[in-house]
Image (cartoon, rainbow, N blue to C red; front, side, top):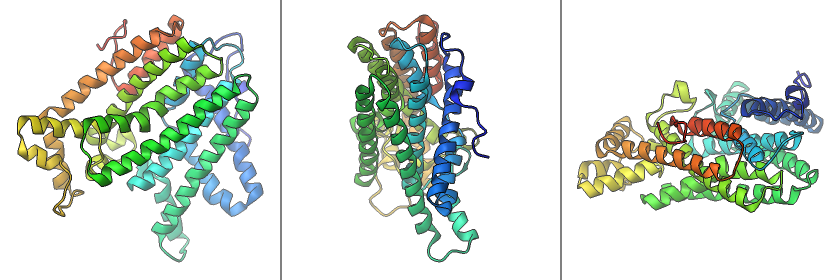
Amino acid sequence: MLGLRPTAAEAVAPVDCPLTAPEAVRAVEAELGHVLDTTLRRAFDVDEVFAQDVAGRVTAFVRRGGKRLRSAFAWCGWRAAGGSGDPTALLRTAAALELVQACALIHDDVMDGSPLRRGAPAVHVDLAHMHRAARMTGSAEVFSTSVAMLAGDLALVWADDLLTETALGSPHGTRLFQEWQAMRTEMVAGQYRDIHAQAAGSSGVDEAVGIATLKSALYTVERPLALGAALTGGDDHTLSALRSAGRCAGLAFQLRDDLLGTYGDPSTTGKPADDDLRTRKLTYLLAVGLWLADVAGDKEAADALSPVTDGADLRSDDAVNRMRAALERTGARDVVESKISELAATSVRHFAGATADPVVRREFTTLVERASGVALGPAGEAA
């Protein structure tokens, strides 16, 4: 049913009582529900078939959840830069981040051919099922790919609309929009570099770090922190500390995601295991493994991890198992675990430079722990 979800105003604490991060995320969920109800209603006004098949799937996908890390990090940036009082602009900015995340995931699943997302069929897979069930003519794969790209575009349109409305109503709207504008371009650049590296058979550690930074670190943590801070007109010193903290935490998040993509349990992660290995995606884990194999003169491991040029089936279970064994034998997994711990601890130290109050610093530390999978001690060091 439309219009039955509580509004953000009904879900938050009184404005003179600053929200905690968990409260802020719950309030973002409420705001997001309200936005989705409104946009879906507008979609039905445009065209019922489009609303049912496309807009309805986008809203259902967004409502299916996710970590909501970007919302929580935006709250941290807002509070670290002095945010207090009415959180409406923050909640709407965070909701826009969740919509742009939906766009990225829908498109990414098409590009990677991933069948699962958030514990359910990916949007393009669900659309293929719809095509077959309705006995439509033509290729189900062509139809589902095309419509999924439109669904991702629609999520981005809704995100841009929401962010623009928020910026127009904010005294710091220009700065907010500039951060948003930069983030969108970085996302596309990172996705392209990811695709390009796969096609080129790239293996360099520096290139892997550059892709992880563009595709994930900036967009997952650094820009959400900066977007939150922009809403308060945060000073340059605060923004610099937040950017440094965000880049480190974002890289730690991506490196953890690389490990989960190789060793994770799909029943826990909600997405397939082995996809990165089957497509030989240039992750930091793969690049480090190949570098260590070369240094050690381990030809077997190097051959397993190198780009395939002889027509071998890289997607086979045997190839995947050999790659995973090579990553273990070279010690790449341990190196990546150590780097994640280092980045998480460094992120917390940088955040302390923003001079946020102790409550916000503790909540940021908790978020970094969630994002990185690293337990941090009282002083922010890896436990």
